Image (cartoon, rainbow, N blue to C red; front, side):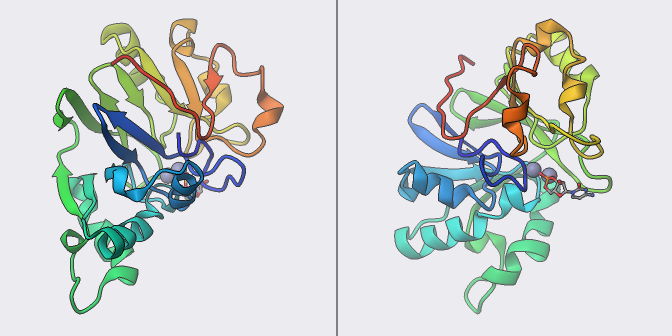
Length: 240
Ligand SMILES: Nc1ccn([C@@H]2O[C@@H]3COP(=O)(O)O[C@H]3[C@H]2O)c(=O)n1
Ligand SMILES: [Zn+2]
Ligand SMILES: [Zn+2]
């Protein structure tokens, strides 16, 4: 995990991941703190093949400009970008264009090798790694996606509580790993609260790891039921 904290976390950094699959490394989201996290982990940019984006909040895409500029200027390569097809235009037009457009670069494809994927449809991310972006509720009126990997691992990204989905994934479809966002305090208006996650049956809690939490994590150690906190800069291995 490059970071396991919320958008505003200063201790745990933004909730972004780096995955390695058969020797190839990708980022799942690349937020404001992703370049800092890669630096802290001594991970050279050269080793990153691309980025999969779940949605367009800055804690998930705020590091894209730096990553793409550095790759273009210093490495001479475009990072790959996997993104739901209905987020492509907004990412450029309402986001990256402001800082990245110039006389020679006028579109997202000038910086990234873009693979726009259809939500709710599986695609082969890498050989043997089947992925699917599914739309989940986050901010009203804003598209956001969760990620399914090899019909085995569910990565919530940012979403409000959806127990029926989690029960279906685990009990009906046999998912083995749930990496779930977790808001520790306050109302769960746009996120899933710890209080809500604690209502899940043990069978789900046992395989649920918590991420995207706030800097007050220490107060909640030992209070997460059968769920465990993921740790910033820690490597996790999943058999998927
Ligand atoms: N309608 C909104 C919009 C944003 N927010 C906060 O801003 C953060 C953006 O990144 P996030 O990780 O989705 O968490 C969001 C909320 O904390 C919020 O709480 N309500
Ligand atoms: Zn977020
Ligand atoms: Zn968000």
